[in-house]
Image (cartoon, helix red, strand yellow):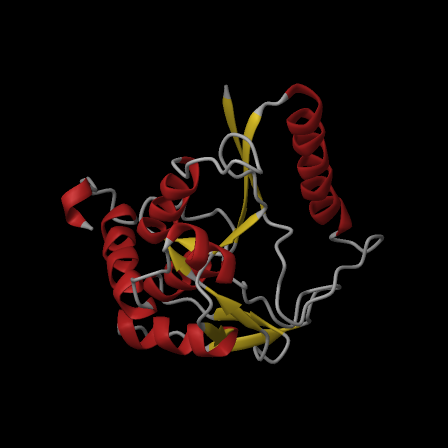
Length: 208
């Protein structure tokens, strides 16, 4: 039996985590899941994979799911102000869904090694190491949508990470994997999807 666990308490370059902060239930819940998975792996020889997934985006995200890429695109297409927390200088790394799926499939198919038992359990970071500031993302979305939206700034939430960039060196080594889709290419496909979705037109796979 093989079980795949996705978490996002990934090893982030330059990041720290507050175990008792306002976001701690999210972070600690992920770490708890990892701990339980590895207990079952050690005690019952269950073949597991723990993938630590960083910011992923693409077509078919719900318009109101609250993630920064979907928020910015929907706000821009509706001509609303784009809300940026703080000064927008915090960085994020955005991985297109096609690249993420490819990484996950490769991880699940990874053959075992004699000293590790079946497969390789991880944890393994999956994401795109190319960094962009949130302000850069907002400006790019406005330009690509041709929107008249303005960027407005709001208070930075407590414990909001200043930098989130994955170290994917292990994924490159074990899976021969790294993201191939540039941000603007991925945004073009995602914007096209939302242009259809927001006007209630059918969004077929070949539309994206």
